[in-house]
Length: 312
Length: 241
Image 1 (cartoon, rainbow over the protein chains, first blue to last red):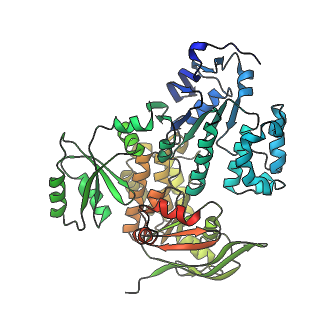
Image 2: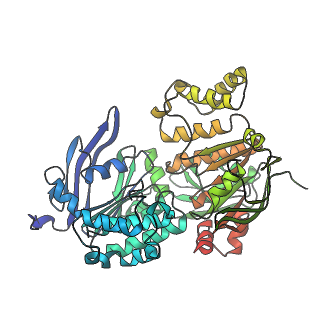
Image 3: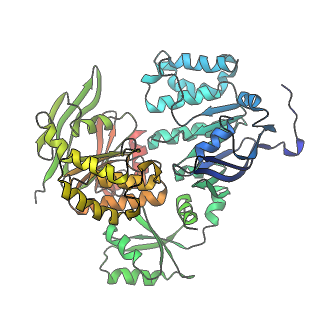
């Protein structure tokens, strides 16, 4: 297939310009714009209801935006929707496979729909498919969560798409399977496939080349994970003491307190003042009868940044 | 001091045909404790929770929940527990108050008690203006907090929370845990599952299941020392991989 290629934008795989979508009275997304480069792993990071699925449904030509434009490899999502469907692999959030077909039948079916043979592109899925090949005669509905996820990824890849869109592939998946899934994505990146992935897990942002942080239909920021972290304007302090619940309450009632959030075993604290006085915080906590106090400055992570941006 | 064991599980086995979903589980949960029940997908957590909530019978083992026997007294167990999951919580097409009245009614609470308690709950959650709003019109974070409050509305001895914070934003997730702490401080035992490993650190004790067995059970701090790990995520990966 020969396509008109705009050589100026050769490296840009996806261009999203000012798209909005309203369902009845609910503004699902407003004025969303971003680009993804060829071979980039781009993450949409945000909680449920942020608008991630709406964006992906527009990109996959399943629904129309109210305004704005989207180009995939210089194809228009409205005029060229049939061509776009040929070059896109899509793994929807809700389980997409046919439960009453076997593993093998699902894979053959998806290949047939796109008019390819499994053998032609098998090299692309080989490493992932080998995990589930021992169960190829098993019905997809009888697979465990992790195996279903692997099969769904194989089915989305079997026609060798140029762009792969994964809607919350790791939601409800345990920490170990999540890590395995991201390792698979890192390997796929080397095949020059542009990958768009959405997730509510903030820690997964660090595994993307660039991310868009989304909340309530709006983009809070778009950048590399490192840059997002470097833009965090406060001095972030990790505080520990013996009684964590009391610590949260006491830090909140401290007169210079800006934000207080539990983070695993410690509390992440930021101060209203330009210069945070760590010594004074320790004294305050001693006066409040805290034991085993540990206070240190730490580097923020994406979740710290996300919560800070939510406040603005 | 011998604390009150509100959940006692001895040699719990559950088989589905040849498949052993729960392979000889042994653990106890103390009254008022926040107990984290972790494990990979398919490790057998849901099977065990169904048994503890009286929805399914074990193949063998001695189990008591809230002082009642899991074989003979499931109805009493159900009266003394609350349950909330991410998937099933409130009725979207009922209002806030209708949902409260419905759940409280099922647990046999008196009309006046329901009305009084509703008032204080609306204030606590700061949703007085939304008493007559349909659930579907509320933001997800509010729904989760309301669902939790309704799950403990009848003042159960134990509340079971199955991935209660899945998909909610990071600020709401933390506010939700403060509600859990409040419930625990008021004496309700909390039995919770989660895939967020930072939340595991908020529990008094956690158990980690793998392939039908409990492979670790202790305070988060002790598990981290034992596995020489910086956080519970590392412990989990070392165990399940």
